[in-house]
Image 1 (spheres, one colour):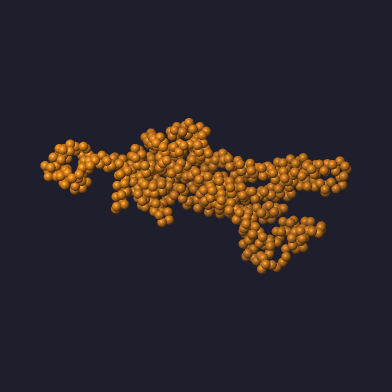
Image 2: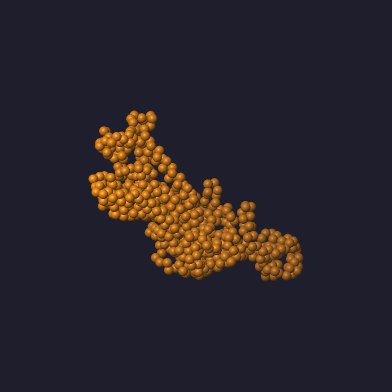
Length: 329
Length: 305
């Protein structure tokens, strides 16, 4: 196993595609960061002018803003699932195209170990890419934060650091599932082109399913229609202290996420609800949508992580069984 | 110590309804260059894929160094073999040296010390930073063999190694195989349908057709079977036998009227001697069976059966 890992990592760190992917992730991180913070210097300048003019009465209310690094880091969660579809398929698929996978099998390397070493390398490559993204996102934001926090009221973390870490762990879970899924597709497809096309089709299909299930969980079926879920804006149009954060007479105080969450699946009958909720919790694409759309730490983080681990284990087990029986050319 | 490096027993491989191997039994002796002869689609590559562990037999079994294919310790036997199956398995965006380093890592070898020696052995020591994608077909083939030689194997499996090579490339590969066999005592299983080339290398032959070995023989036996001779058709081979014995000439009686005579006797004297024995010479023709015609006669015979 160590030999196979050593060989695969060596190949990874010489792979131009890998470096291209890291650069792309870095660029996306940097671009997201710049887009998010570009108005802050102007705001700080205006605040400084206000201070100079002695207008300090409403300063903190007027010039309050947040960098919210933790929220920003979730805005591009979808690249966690799309980028590896291409990278893993091409990196591992090449072994089938040039038949170098044979060099491992012929000398007696165990097929399950070949599979697992590929999984580990793919997973680590995803983490490196995500780190590059986070670093590129973090550095400009943090510099701006340090520079202007004395002038305007700024928060770097919207949620607690612990919750931020939990969010990142969910991200790692999603990466693990994606690595397992794309590796399964690639090791089964047996060619780079087939693997890339299949992986992209599968992930798009999963996003469609996630969207559909998400809709079903929050929008009542006609037959199951027994109550009306008011939209958030409907409930917050009229400024009301009790509605900031949203106050529901039945569910109490909470954020928008809490508000939406409180209605999750309540429009469905028990059996249907269990099925849809299970699929929604399990699919990495549903988790991505959730992470991108929510404004707090997901209330189902533990479930997400367990689902990720179980799904990854199941996909890997299926992949190992298939690869163990696969007839190589 | 096992005499045979590879033994297959009634090996079968089906692809859906197509029988690629149909009860194939063969034996590759240690130290041999085993020429695996058969036309396209006869089952040569299928057999090689099976013994390399790339595919699995439908039925039957094989032994590598005395270890059966379903034994878990077959992995240890595989460590002793190297193979080039059809096209060389190399990274085209790497140099020759990097390709070998990669294989060394897979094998878990502690240092890269032997790489230069292998490159020199296959004649790729001066390729420097040239990527494998810029290699000629012959160079790629030699690099494939070099990768197979990592780990110092004592059994090398080469599937059609001279396919597509120019005459110079063919000579280079031939010399390399002979060198590996003579100097490193590597047993070589080489499949080919270019019989003339195989006849310059092989010490043993296995003729395959329709997934079955139809004949296994040593190079000496094949040479005897393909020897130059005069094929005579006479009215009485017993009389011919007496006359040839008297003349101290080597021969082989094929049937009641036909015999192969392995020399060029004085045919006037022979005809006169046969006349005295009341035996007439009906036809007489020079017979020079090449490996190809021998194979054709074998396959034809098998088809006739």
